[in-house]
Image (cartoon, rainbow, N blue to C red; front, side, top):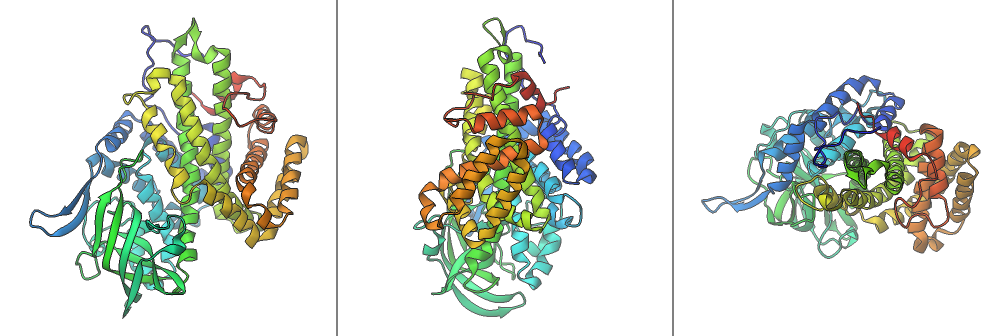
Length: 548
């Protein structure tokens, strides 16, 4: 389709469009999962996310960074982070739209995880910083359920859909947010080296209480009403604790914010370093089993990384397509220039495959069937690794479509480009995800063959994909100890096979063929836009973005 061109050849800002209705890949994924009951609500959200007011709000939230105030004017320790009103508006939208609780509050609804995934995918395109405390709150719910008495007290405040920005004890609030505190300066991802200690205080109404002393090097969203924190009670290993911002007696818990991180992106969200000075906490799960306890929370947030990175890719594609349809170069619109069309078509394939990968994974959180369990165990780190990596590459390519107009802060691409790497690092870097794939296979060896059998069955009409699946079958037949150095290559190949199978099932025949022929071609992966499989570029672009 050809858009009208402005007389000064400057591209109008993309505002006031429906983020959901213009995304046929997303909408079909929601309906396919059985979440028709939520379609009208997602249409409403799509209007909200694409509205000019929401876009301005997101810009302000990023521009007016949070401020740390360690002490009150009277010298009292308050450890408070103050936000611009735009941050609270982003948090209000996220909470109202279900990002903090939907899969658990409406657990009996069909396709509820896909319904949730669609909201997160859209929200991340507009204001990503607020996804952090919102999705961590949602992910904390199954971990908090390990302490029944505590959970019963908190559940009404977790399921409430109103954002409550007040910095007061949780018992006086109508809703709360919950974060996570794992990493320390000496260990990073190697949380076995943590030194934070927990000393027993006795039993209370919510179980075993402890005084926690130590630090956390990355303590994201410190203004959450509570965090799940790792600390050692003895030499058996770390335990997991619920550590609120305010003690049950209404006094401030001694969690001292040392400083806020000066991050490359994700600036609307405050991330901090903190010291615990005998902070009150209550045990969650089995003592000494804190790492597997808190990793359950990380599994859900890794799904969120895959979803939000698919959202980044989607927004980069839409911005690039919008720009190319309105900008003239060398006598005709950019989108009609053959090499630009090839690049945009390749980006369209990337976006479609990333969306299918994330949304299909989300839908499988609704089921405990053998294939779905195997898929969740293995494909969660695969999708987290691959979508997050591809988001960095695709946002860079989209910025280049704009040329110099993309490399300025007055346009949309600077913030998106800075934001893209955060998901690759948050909840485990690329190497950690690839090692987690191997660990998942090692712990449940039958899972990978259940997954590969499914991919092989889907690929009966695609010999190139079948050959790749067979190659993976041969790889996973080797002893796990021999695979570690190859973990990135294996994870990439598994990601591409899963995406190819999903394209075969749910994309057009042309898009599926283009994806398979390009992604499994010798030498693919060096640069986006080298080939889109020789398919009709215009059709591939129009397949992923519906413009009225």
